[in-house]
Amino acid sequence: MKQRVESRWIVIYAMILGIAYVILGATEFTLGIYSLFSPMDNINFVGVISADIFGGFAAIVIGATYLSATSILRGKYESWGYILVGLFLSIVYGAIYLLIVCADGLEALLAYWGGEGEWTWEWLTSGTAGPGLLRPEIWLFLASLPLAYLTLGALRQLNILGKGKTL
Image 1: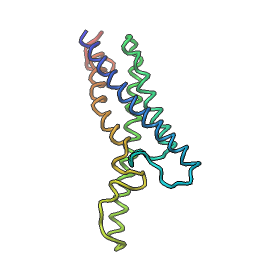
Image 2: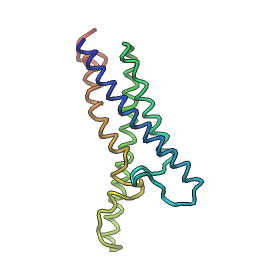
Image 3: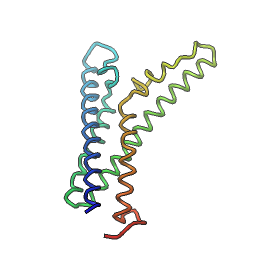
Image 4: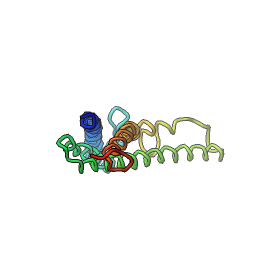
């Protein structure tokens, strides 16, 4: 019974992340399509969600993957794979956006060392990836880390990953 209660909280957490990813992805995708036909440059929503067709599509896929894990509540243990794949995709895309922010910082540092201007911290909030560190995919990646810990612990208890109790 304890495992079922813990699984329910993990699925609820995955559903919350899935809904957040789908909303973010739909917004980014819609802004990206709108920016194709709009004469305005640099369209964004509230200064944080940028117009990104491919990033929006990736966020929708991640959200749909998380939302597919609801069958765990019906006892289908194969559905743990949806959470694991969603976590993997969250980590990959979060790491990509973090690396883009780090590359922007390195570019600013090299420009400063080369005498091309003064050092500013502006690269943290604006750069190649749009809003820089404020990019929502980075924060959703960080929000998915507790889910990774809880999921791996639950899978060990189910003896799917080994070192746990048997069913």
